[in-house]
Image (cartoon, rainbow, N blue to C red; front, top):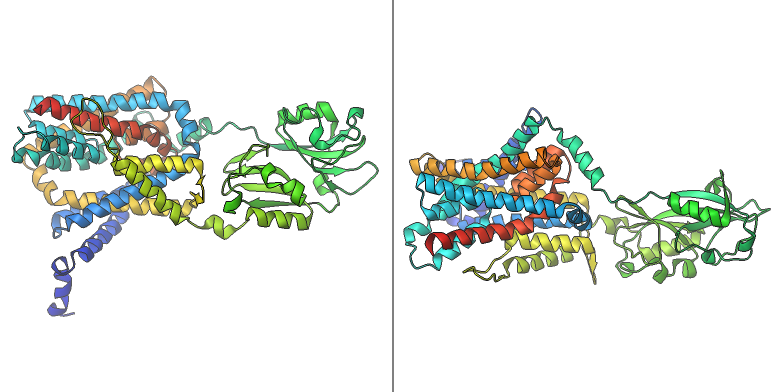
Length: 563
């Protein structure tokens, strides 16, 4: 290829800056993924490698259109946190009730210690107060607090223009080390206490799992004379001890029949019931005695099938409202939701993706399956209309000003906090009207990785041009040292206290660190090292309060410095 033919590529920055930005972003993501794939003693950077590839490429490449980089950075962050929130939603509030107060107190301590260390290092080193604000934001990887600092300073008449640029420069110096410092602190704690992250992840998941007793089935012979001619739905204690009776074999008969609520009992009948061990024991005291016989293996015109709920018209409705038994003659024996097996009590509402276990005749089950949906394609499809509706609502919440008495500027949760909170909420609800927030796990992981890669690449490219020049100057080295201490001192202090005094699980600590520093790279690293999604639970538990505290803290510091 001749020189003339290469000119179009070399001049791409002038002829098509957007295309150049996308090309460089793609190159950075590719190099970063390769870098992150290398492992030393079982530890690798993972997607975080994209950040360092971005800094390196940004130092040598032509300047990238900053509007495009800003857009890609925010887009990547929104996609990442929204997918995290969708996955956390179903079990988030249960986890928050268990350990939310303790975690948020520790997160508030990290924020407070960071502010104190920033002020202390600024005083000891004689740093400019505007630079201290940038160090506090960069050393805690909190971009919204940098924006809040710049907004607050712009409203003060005694801040000259040359000071207005210092927060952003100090932020750019402190940010990359903060990412490394948070990850490094986790590695030091892991080595110091000889922690096996994967084992701790299993312990964490076991300790925080929803305590639901598993369901089992038991066969009974009716020998209570008071139940002669009584319908199954009218057996005493059915409400207090909910069990589901799905099959019945009449005395003196060999074939099994479907058992519905209206089926009447006679002495000598054999029935198959599903429920918890405790409820089955209580039911046994009413109906008769248990026998070691499996009615599912006996002949009869009764079939069993697992059906997936995918029809949007039945979502939010109960089994009773659908009339599966009355209209279609099928019995629901249990409902599987995620890792939980649920007894189909009268007020249990169906959610998208529930697996309903049906017992009945072949033609009846076929009609009931059509009603519930049972579409594998629908289950594996990503619902993009509610996905983007949720993102739009999250952006609206994140940019909404929240006035706090005493602060010169209103608080905002930002493009990370707003979408995260909305995603947790809609993930918990599952459905609002016709909108169903369901995303297959593989799609969630793919969009999340794509988003965080865009974020890392953009941040690295933005920091790259100034990073090495500022870092190796005298003032840059001071900023780097001060920022490192703002990052490390609070984390080590709280981390040692949490592990030694509170005996906190490493998974909880890693999520606490990532959330209290509002640091997606640390969360990505924590999930990689633990090979589990558990750190995201504590990350989300402390993130909202941390975001508010960091924005408030930097505005308070600005008022104290320049007010």
